[in-house]
Image 1 (cartoon, rainbow, N blue to C red):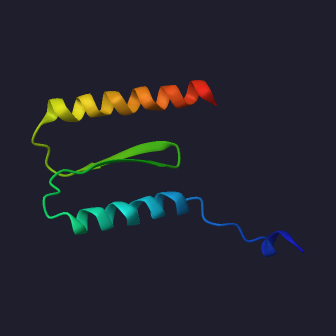
Image 2 (image 1 turned 90 degrees about the vertical axis):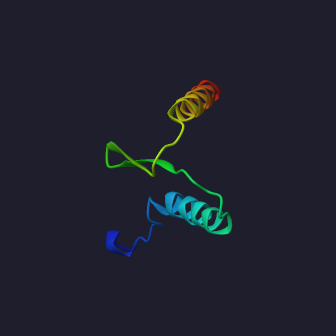
Length: 76
């Protein structure tokens, strides 16, 4: 076996699976109104969003996500 024969799943497979799930949820929910996505590509983060109606609610949600990420880091 040489290096060309080694088959690895693409590194983006988890992100693609997550996006498929999100797409299904949005498609099935006619009342879905806002989307905010943060993607790390290479070493850089890229953000994508629809219109944001309630910016303070988004900021609070991001703070909760940050807290969750920090908690996960401390338990790993």
